[in-house]
Length: 361
Image 1 (spheres, rainbow, N blue to C red):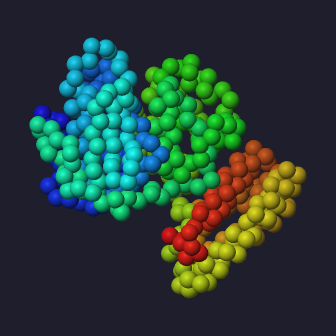
Image 2 (cartoon, rainbow, N blue to C red):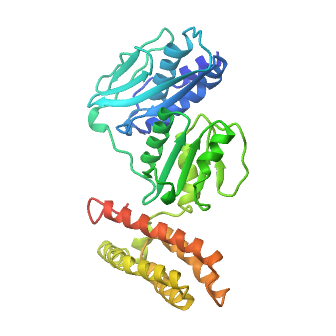
Image 3 (tube, helix red, strand yellow):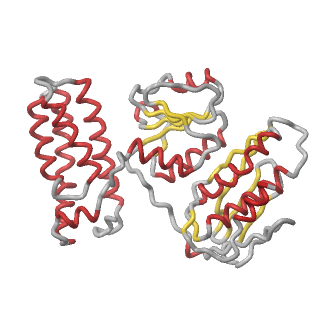
């Protein structure tokens, strides 16, 4: 009865063309059925293919379609085999079709994006989906210049998590030495420990679906099954220091509300950053605290004329540490300089990705 009420409440009677993130809609549908799936011994893994993108549709409409598909294709079947692992594939195989399919099953529901009614119906409700193909929109990344690696028990699970991180803006790699985030989705304690052995001690670790609770610095847990908005909140909290990469309103205010001057100041900043970053790294290698203080002080002054809030916030912590030490305190200064380097690279990646000079929102 509870699930029926949830399903009815998530089936809107009118079309809503708000932009919907398919990750979150599917996650919520799986979360609603999770207790029943677990009671039947089913581990349902959502796998989002790389072509998944934001849709102009009510999130509740998409959520109800996925919810209904799970009820029909998974929960209403008598599975003799327990501890069954199934993959729920979500993709857009062509220009006018959203496809949801269950691996190992011939059942596939395809929902035309340019029709007022879906071809998918059940005895409980009639699902309506109205998504014109021209309203498909590529998801905008929230992070730039960061690398991540995913380690999981199953390759489909790995693919699904990688798609989530890619959607947020991470570059995926198998090189453990250069990653900022390691997402580990392994149940057994020995697998988690083995996966983390080669990690740098400053690498952020995110754990999901593990049987053991770990209390370590830079190790964090996230709920399972995943919710995309919780993953996004984690990324914002731990990588973006809650500051905008580029605050357009702040930049306009500092440029006396002159857009040309705002763009000019940003261009000057971006032209000088490579050399500034090189000089910072040279000062760090030679442990020259005076040279480091001079370049940081100059960069601080330059940032006051732009809206690079995240970089500005990151650099503000360094002079305080320098003033507390007569010599180069590597334990205190190096982590701050590494973080500063990340934010410089992040800003450069964002700047280079702009389609037009005025694209700074």
